[in-house]
Amino acid sequence: MAENNNETDKLLAIKEIIFGEQEKRYDNELAALKKQVEQNEKDNQQAFEKVKKELAETKNSLLTEIKGLESKLLSEVDALQKSKTDRVLLSKLFTDMVNKINDAG
Image (cartoon, rainbow, N blue to C red):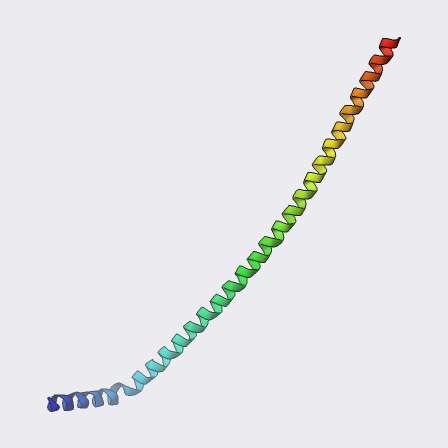
């Protein structure tokens, strides 16, 4: 068993000699890439939250503007209805007056 560990240690030492620097370089590059990916994820999340907030603000602004326009439209419709009613009433009064004149004459 001790002989087997000794051989394994020798193989690991040879592996370290042959591939050690390259393995360390790959490990460093992989760590740098992982760090960059984490930073990109963080940046993307922040950008998403910013856009989400701006979208909500735009939605609220549009809703407020729509409500104002709706209120203005209803006021205009109401004014037109009153104007129409006044014309109908005026027409009826003139008709009644003409009928009374005709009846009196």
